[in-house]
Image 1 (cartoon, rainbow, N blue to C red):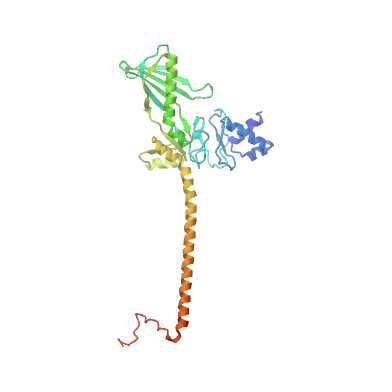
Image 2 (cartoon, rainbow, N blue to C red):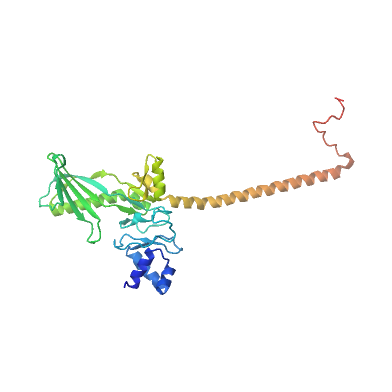
Amino acid sequence: MPDIKQRCLKLALEGYSVGAIARALKRDKSRVSRHLKYWVEVGCLINTAPRGEPANFVRGPNLPKQTKEVLPPRNSTSNDMTVGTVGYGPIIEDLPIIGGKPEPRFIPMRCHALGHRFPVLKGPDNGVPWTRTSHPSGVPNHVLIVPLDTDPLSDRHVKVVYREGKESQSLEIWTPEVVITTPDALNDFSKWATNRAQRVANWLTRKYGFEFGLPEYCQSPHYAAAVPREVAQAAKEIGLKGPEIWWDTSRGRGELETSKEKMAVALQTLPHRVSNLEAGLVPTLEKLVEVQNGLVEGQEMLLKSHTALLEYLQKLLGDNAPAPPTPPDSDPGGMYG
């Protein structure tokens, strides 16, 4: 039978709150909170709730693959985990996170697998245990699959493709996709990704004697934000897209994608910018209402003062008060009688 810590993890993945887990397991709420905090610290859970609000847990990047949610979150009406959400859900499942724990003010952006191409200045000295070799167009292509970590449950790996041409040789390093959680991490991502590929190239140099030139992208980064799949499908069907963004449903869920870093940052910071706009707009509207009320009160006071002044002049002048002006449509002299 699973221990209490494991059962807390299972129930949290099923959408139970901290209090509900404590009641279900007949344990103290503070003890359940400590267990869940442990799972957050080791990366098996992510708490997506803002500070001060009840915890809301989703799968973390280090959760073993055989651990699956039994039920969708309690605020969901569909088995599609992206329904009613933007940025959270399966998009962060089993992927390494760059930028730290996701924050509600930023939308996590998934970056597709990246390819860097290095010119090969010198081929390998030692025998490389290639995973497979093919000869498209007569050019030998050697493929090497290198595990990214030692976890046997992980399928994340680096794919190395060595194109052994007669006149020129190149080597492509394909590194797995990641989730980027903050604008700072996204702005630095291109440099970070290139450094990651360079570390793989350095390992190949030490291990097998390669010598490489400077790398370049053989596939530029594509950034994706999770959206409800129905929305993405409808947008695709009506041809809704822009020069820098498009919709994708090929992974069984909805995503809004872009290859432009500035557009990705704009998408990622959308909740934060809307929140700031609301924070600045509400006081402004309140001030406008206050000014408008003041103007109305001023007009009412001016009208009362004007009426009082007329009444005072009438009393002061008495019988000598001038007759009121003749209406323009009257005919006092009988000119037309």
